[in-house]
Image (cartoon, rainbow, N blue to C red; front, top):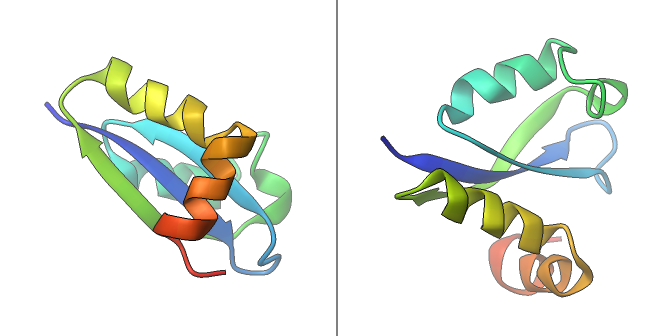
Amino acid sequence: MMYFTYILRSTNYSNQYYYGSTSDVERRLEKHNNGKSYHTSKYKPWKIIFYAAFETRRLAEDFEKYLKNSSGRAFMRKRLIQV
């Protein structure tokens, strides 16, 4: 099984991002867009702007954690997405 770290961008609030990890990116996006996540329901709908696959859940969660700190956000803006 593969695990994924993903970045979402709100389609209505383009400066709002969400970082997460899952084993099923499409199903997780559907939950975000259906308001099933407290943290993302305010800014829905969302679109996937980046995802990466990892062999273990731990690696995916570690990369998610990295993206949530200041150096990870800088890396994201420089290397992963177009702002």
